[in-house]
Length: 325
Picture 1 (tube, rainbow, N blue to C red):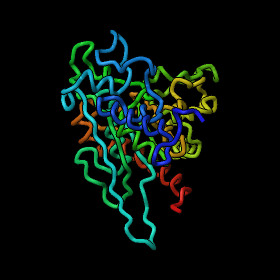
Picture 2 (picture 1 turned 30 degrees about the vertical axis):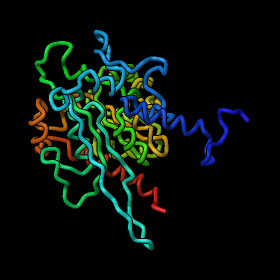
Picture 3 (picture 1 turned 180 degrees about the vertical axis):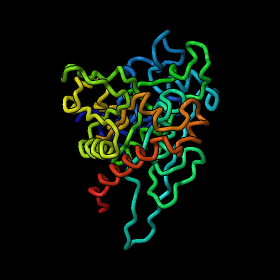
């Protein structure tokens, strides 16, 4: 036996104890505990976690890079909101439900506008008051939000707070995903990012920019979302079957990376919505500001409620196949 891995007094390999103690010490010093305990770091293992600003025109490497560089700016430049529902089972003969689904908005607030409000709505909460909607199921949720002014100078805009989903290393976000069977992650995109095939008919049909690309590695949840959103009158595109919707490859929007939080669930799969600006704007009576979105989602012409309810029906359909044993 290798002498460095001989068991200690407790019978556990010494190296395992030392690894754990080293990881805990590193975490105390500020290093990500998940990475120290064997998780995949979002940056090269030989590269120290960055503290300074990103290069001009580049994104923050990870959420923790952003948190360190903008230390003391939470609540001013950015914010995080989440809710984990407390569940208790203290009765031996009975079984109680547990939270199976988490809804996420990784680029909420002013980064990809409308995703925060939709995250709250799908999770069962009023986006304006944060009160639970009466008579509906509620889900756990997590959001990272840009709080900067729309008139902020270049280099200090909300868009500069964007961290690519697969580089998300927020400990709360990842722990919530890892303890869920399903994650639905909400994102915003531009219509020009969807490569519609325009020569299928003659004359070419006019492209409706109000579209949602449904991705992620969970086939059941993805297909349920596509079906429900289409039934509600929305242009939903299955990212894994784009040709069915007259769209070319959607690899850049399909949410298939295994490090994407939507796929870091107990099942290693989830779903992601990439919604165009035009679609998100159509969900609200007034899309212009944070406060106007929070107060106008119930407007008569707003399509927030049909979109929200379609997503909730899809989640319920999938959860019905996941019994509590």
